[in-house]
Structure formats: structure tokens, C-alpha cells
Length: 331
Image (tube, helix red, strand yellow):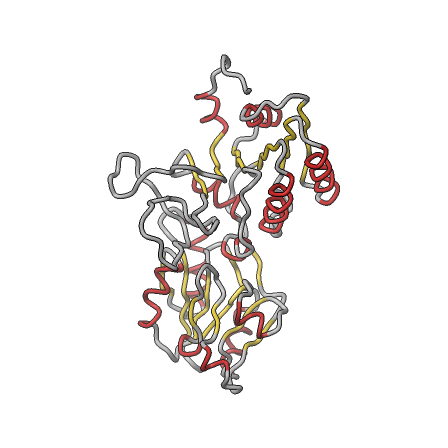
């Protein structure tokens, strides 16, 4: 039987008990884990991987693959390039699909830019002896024990952005149908109100609150005071999440809330290519790479610049209460 190892994308701020659970599963299968903080780190080290070893791939510690023993047997019996959990045709998988890559062989694949998907290089594609195996029922999730956050998004007149934003947001929540979403219409235009009602009808987890006046940023306060959630996620109406979000961070609201155990604020912000995975904007020379993964700013540190703008942010409502000024009004 060929050797198996596991590539795990994780950092010191992940849930300790869930990480131990994953490593216990791997230990019972005699599969040693290799840790990387981000996909970019894996990409940089990819040439150092044993090209003939099969690697189970965990883009985060919260993913669990069912039937791991069977996966190992299948990957051992036939020389698959990769096993992935989504019914897609191999050409789509190779080009840009963000399916769950369950396992892979380094000699036949490489890490794509901005995606968890691994695909074969052009010369390998022409070799018809190499191929992938798909199973649509391999993935489940282990969610951390945290207070479920509420997502709050307010909007006024940006109907074109709003529709795309909500489509991307709900797609990213495909595996978290229990996450409540409050959409607040600030004196919405007819077009915006129609979109809000449409999405409320589509998704049971969405509720719509309408304000007679455009209270602007004060809508955040309305949402928090109305529901009093322990954990709050604020979203902007023009922040379009990439489709790969639900594969890289399938339970991202829980990850946000869990990371609040280590800090008071967690967020995603956009770079010029509107990718959600870069937390810090450092305005360095643009290169065709994206810092996929979580990045942290240590208060007072001169290593990186602080967050300039965060389009998707999570914090505890008690932090908002400490800074709330009753004399301030939206305008």
C-alpha cells in the first residue's frame, strides 16, 4: 500500500479540541500530518513534498471526510491524481472548480491561485492514464461550540451590488443554514426592497427589517438592539464573496466567532481583485498571488499596517455596547 500523509491548513488560533480530534483520527490511521498556515505556504513548499506519496487534504481543521478507510483503499488500488467530493466533469475540475479536494499526488497536481482546488499541469492533462475520482458524499463538518453569530447587512439604493452580494453570501452559507441573517432596508428604493423580499422568500434564515428613514450606519445599532446577539457579523452590501469561500471556509461564521476567543475583532477585507481572504492591506507591489488564509494584526506591532477597511467583520455585541454613544445619530 502506498504511503499516506495529510496536509492540514491550520494556525494557533484554531479550536484546540477540534484540532486534537482531527489529529487523533489521523493517528489511528497512521497518517502523519503536515501543517501549513495558508495555501500560499503550501504552494511555496509544494516542491518539497514527496512526489509519490498520497496526501489527504484538509483546507481547515473543521472538515471531516467520511469513509476515510475506503478513500485510502480506493486511492491505493488505482493511480488517481486526486479524489474530490463533488460531481463535476474533470475538465471543469481542472480549470477552475472549487470542489473539495480530498486527496492528491504531488507529481500530478499543483495548487491553483486563489482556490483550494488542485489541478493537473497542461502536459499531464494530455496523459490519458491519469484521472480523478469523484464522490459527492464524502464531506461533513465539525462546528466549534460557540454562540451562533447573527449576520447583519444594511442597504439603501445599491440594488445591482446587493443582488450579487446576497447571492454570494448565501452561497457561502450553504453548510450553515442555521446562521440567521438580518437585512435592514434604510428607506430602500423599490428595486432594493424587491430584492430584500425576494431573498427573504427564498431563505428561511433571512429576515428583513425596514426603516422609514435612511439611518445609514445607525442601522447596525438597530439590528444589534433588536436581537441582542452575543456575536455579530456586519456585512456590506457591495462585498461579493468568491465562490471558493464555502470550500475554503465552509463554516466561516463559526470560525469568526471562535477566533473572538483570542481577539475582539475578526474581519475579511477586499484587495484590488475583490478576494475575501486577505485581512490586511499593505499596499505592496501587486503580484499574481493572494494571501489565502487568516492573517493577524498585533496591536502596536510595526510588522504590518492595521486594517484600513473591513467589509465583513465580526465582534461581540458587548464590545459595541462599550463604544456606543447614545448622542450620535445616523444621518
